[in-house]
Length: 273
Ligand code: SAM
Image (cartoon, rainbow, N blue to C red; front, side, top):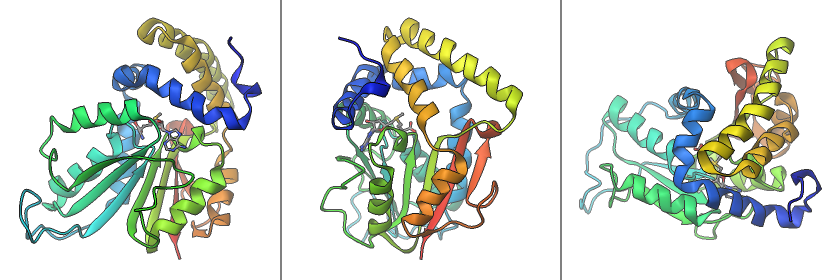
């Protein structure tokens, strides 16, 4: 039986999200590119370039060097196939010659993690302690991730699917070190009224159609579009970030959040006091 996602009880949502991402995981990266016309790459690049701080070049190699220790620990939650994690590692290495960063990807869906592992196998990070994949839930992170242990927590296009936004944010707050940073990348609300109407029409017609044609799965993409509509506005979500304890900067665009492409995508920031 098919039922519209709005009527789905919260308790069922998690298992349905699991099956949505299982059905799309092998084609996930291709679908992202087609549906956003490749623009999600630019959003992710901007997000990561702001969040990775300046760092000194590495003294030790992450490949079999016993003295290697991560000097900067990142947690990429709902990390899927590793889009953000790989960008973080590349940014530190390419810009600062630093390979002391470690990123742990946590995702609820094993199909996505599996695609991520296959992808990392094509990179220099494979078989190094720089990247780890963990099966787990954003709302109650795996117990080996200790309080006050993380320098940077990222969640990109993943928090929208979680049943409790406050639970995700309070877990992020708990595991971050004091001074550690939170970055949330998610679909926002388009600010220009004309563009908003165009975008609405486009997403409700073109996205499910592309899902049908490219993935043979209209329903999953219909759900994705509906979940974007239901997600809080930029100031509403920034308020939740503050309520979780984070310092966010001023409650405006350019402060607590930054809009990309007129708010199609938004980056919310926070610092653990
Ligand atoms: N961050 C990646 C990116 O930007 O390409 C993947 C985003 S993908 C749209 C959303 C991911 O969130 C999926 O891999 C899904 O399995 C994961 N997810 C959904 N709910 C989750 C939860 N409660 N805890 C952890 N991961 C979750």
